[in-house]
Image (cartoon, helix red, strand yellow):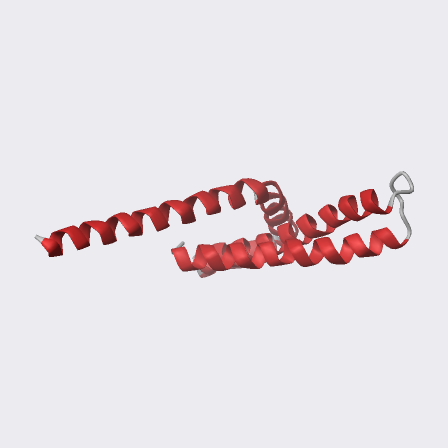
Length: 128
């Protein structure tokens, strides 16, 4: 994945976290379900909605990228066995969501540092 693709993926998934958090948090705070506390209901259901929908969006993005790179025979077999394919995609997407977000952030930071080093080395070679 390029730096641009990683940033786009991160922005999309984090946008879904924020919007899902606000929507589900506000809905849950209307009729508190957790210890009769609006704040606790807002935070709990906000996290569930935000991270849940973001994990689903992440699963879709990663699955489409995975299947796009495969051949026709693989796609046909995956289509015939669609319940298994769907289950694998959902479980892989949900269980790898947080680790992949962390990996993505670390990778973006390392790519930015690498670009800065390359720019600095180009600047020093042009000065000589």
